Image: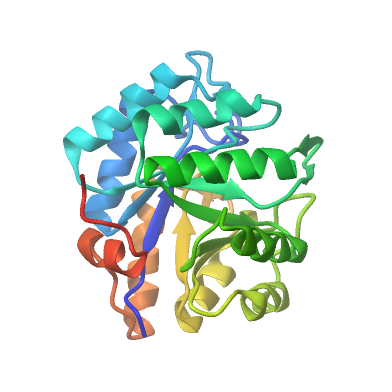
Length: 274
Ligand code: ZN
């Protein structure tokens, strides 16, 4: 089996300081959490940024500062969000990628209800985003929240907007998408185009079971406070690396070696760091 890539998602758009006082929101805090996770074995950092007030944003300056600080500390693979939350314009969502050229960027392969809002990823937006990624050498991480999104991705592959081998992130237990059950993860993975790589996470209480399945099935995992703030029932994680340490323990039990950054780059068909 391929070595295991661990992605850390420290911040996201939906988690608040009310959910956990330990949430990293300032660029320095996010960079420090990413670095600690990297030291614990994460090879990819999925990055969101917040305003000074802690609100979700696609502000270029915040991305510039955060990514700059992370790059100073370590060579972790940078995977920037292209949604940033709900309601940002197509231009706001694409600009930080064109300027900062991260290794990877998220590509949400369809529209859906998202908690109490609507997450819009129109066909027109997806084509624009895909072309921007191709033009800037950014590998898409195709996020699928529902089975139909894999079919969308397959059609975009035929158009050349997405190019094989595609990397998928199975995003489960997001209200509006698929429930975080073992059956649903199996259902998604069965449908992926041959030769794809994939990772998975489940929000909230489904996180641990889905990580365990992904490790066992040959997928990769994403953990962090974007998806789940509890290390155990009624016990908040203080740092994101605590989730990485648990994945390390599980991977060891499943005889699955964990990939370092260089190995993760090979698995994801990324070029060596620019
Ligand atoms: Zn995200």
